[in-house]
Image 1 (spheres, rainbow, N blue to C red):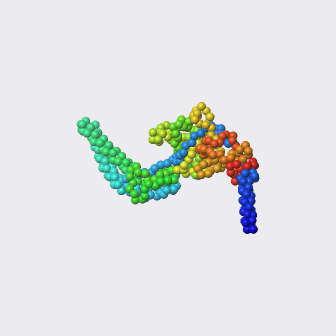
Image 2: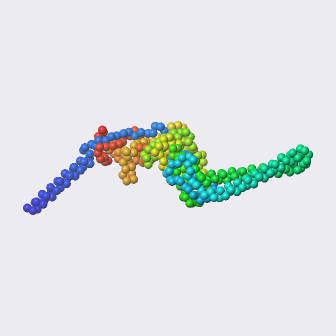
Image 3: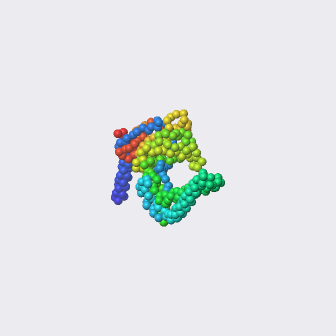
Length: 362
């Protein structure tokens, strides 16, 4: 009796497991189609393109330094502070300059006295020469003495001008309006000639600076329009090529290209950018370029380090296709292999997709 009972129980378990397995297979076979939205891949009809990475820099950027050596007595500047042109920023101890100024004033007084005496003597001897009371040599000597005194006075005045020029470097003002982005010294430090103290940048005018390879630099022309993508902000702005370097001697075979940004609002110097140089289909394009297949990034499926997309099979099922991706521009990504132009792929679905799932178009 017990043996019969155990056999019946074992048979019931097998039947239950079989039913559960059938249900799972039925679910896997996708008896209920998944509603999906599809799209068709397209080739970049505008032609080929290359991209280059770089960063934003301020078009107007200056380093503030001094031409004289002295201790910084006042430094009214902090990083991030907005300043106006002509605003006092740095004061340097001017004791040495003041001493030179006193010496220059004394030399001017002495030279002025010598000049006045030599002028009167020269005028006196001119009158004596006219009345034949002085010789030509005596008049020539007085004229030479007068000219020397005049030259001495001019030299003293020029020395004073030099001191006044040094005074301007004891009180340093902002040459442009902008934002302080770097600070290299503090109050009490010793300032040296040519040593930068502050950096001021004007963020209202920004440039993207990128390095382009030697294979592509000949395709880029000044004035061409480009797309500048900032991945950190998920934003793309337009720009115009303003400068193209013709030498790569100091950049390791890369050529520097500068792009003026048209809309620099909300952008800051130092942000990393990716610049897309698009070329129309013409004879100038290298034969190695091919039309690029572009799809939205939202359609991609990532599993580990693999990237794919679900495509539509002839049996109206979803098939996971692994891809090789290229450059990313805004919300689109370039497909190098795995997807051909005019091929349907799934953008979104109302249920969970898997390889072989039955689908139903919305």
